Length: 246
Image 1: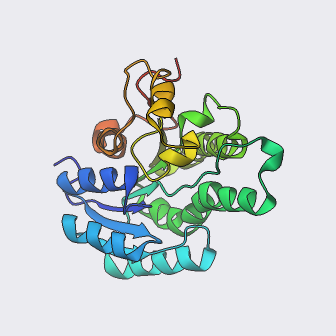
Image 2: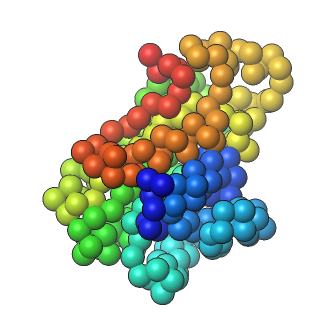
């Protein structure tokens, strides 16, 4: 029960890696808000873990501000924030990604981190404690061709993690990131371009441990980094990738 008594928000918590993090946090004693744009899945996940479902568009200032007000009324204090919500574009040459796709990727993958910080960091500073976890990607460390702007958004997230960690350390707030390789999530087919046995075999050949990341892998890593066991760990971008980045 490493998170006993703590409150946590997991954005994009209704499916994929986010769901794995939600389940692990709840199993370790946390009260979890499943924040997602998919209301039905969020309610299902919240019911499974005795948590709270909340509709949020993490790219919208008004939506994130409303969630912050709801959290204050519900719990008063937020201990853990997991910025997991993310999207990608289909593999294609960088110049063929249209402006709308580009803007959406950076709104969801980057602006969301800013908005969550804007509305939740002040209370963490006031409390003198807190943990923020950004779900980045191996794409931010070892970029793949034809995913250029997704790669860049995750590289941004890693740099933001380190900058946030330095600035918030004097206030007792830790900020870390995890960098998964592709896994069994709704984004897998988008990363690969097409989900076929041949494409899976080609991708798995680049992972020394020979398997995709799982939601459980992300939950375990996230739990450690957000628990008091990691009280001396801040500003890291932990590779949870089976050796992909070596």
